[in-house]
Length: 146
Image 1: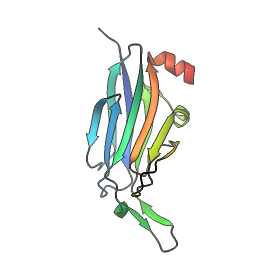
Image 2 (image 1 turned 60 degrees about the vertical axis):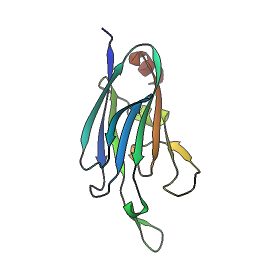
Image 3 (image 1 turned 180 degrees about the vertical axis):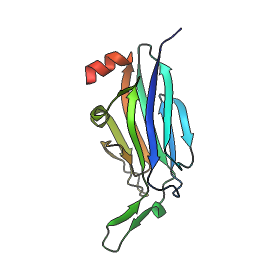
């Protein structure tokens, strides 16, 4: 029997009416596919803890310009976003490690192909992908990166 690693996190939205979609992948396998995040959800993914390199991806999809309200001065009045919190591997919360190791690639919801890459602070406000590379066995990776 192969040991497994549990990946858990909380997913939430700031606007239940905005039809923001969400996907969660590990490597090439999609574990979560939600077309409209309407309420807070606890998500759990199990993967093998065998010796390997992995990439965890969170994808925000379906956001439109109508999901952001901007006044005449260019100030955002309201914005539909998704938040990822309490990301943990085997119940060990990553906390600041997520910010240090994850990359958020997005295009500011514009029609241009230019992609911005920045640190991920827990909130996805643009269609795009948060990527976190890690390796298993997970406890070794956690020790090396804490």
